[in-house]
Length: 199
Image (tube, rainbow, N blue to C red; front, side, top):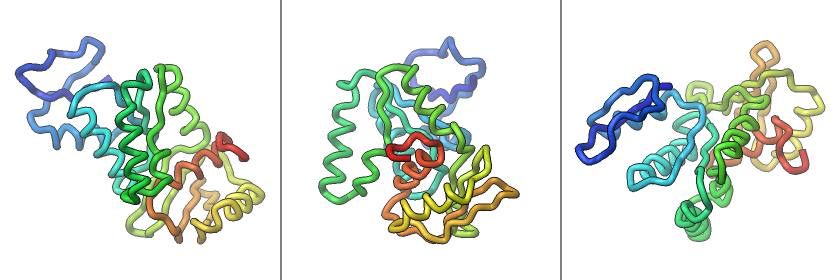
């Protein structure tokens, strides 16, 4: 494993579980490297830095600035009570979409957190917004049938149109979407993986 550490005079030393550790002086550079190559994010109880990273990644995904990946807060419910309250408050005040509340998943054990990641990548290989073609692109491990495509178009008709399946690339592309945020795409991922309610 590779760890991105921050050099602080009052923090603990090297993490004994890391294979390789890279030290950073500035938080923003460290965050860039943490975000650039990660395919899932686990947040454990911590201080202001942990919350800063959580909300940064949340905002980047919400606004389509980085690929959609699992976001998981791990630990006992009491540790994340204030984060849940913040999400609810923002949704009620209209500063985030109600769908955004479901972007962050909560797991009370490492096993549950790993299950969430495995479910996300059960059939989906990745989700990103392509700025050049202005499409949401979802890679799949297996072909999409006509019936599945028709069911997706029906279920998401109010939010997505221009849904195209590219069998040669195993790529689902959505060229027109009526979204306030990209959180809605998490529901589509669940449908594709067969893990959504009613799918």
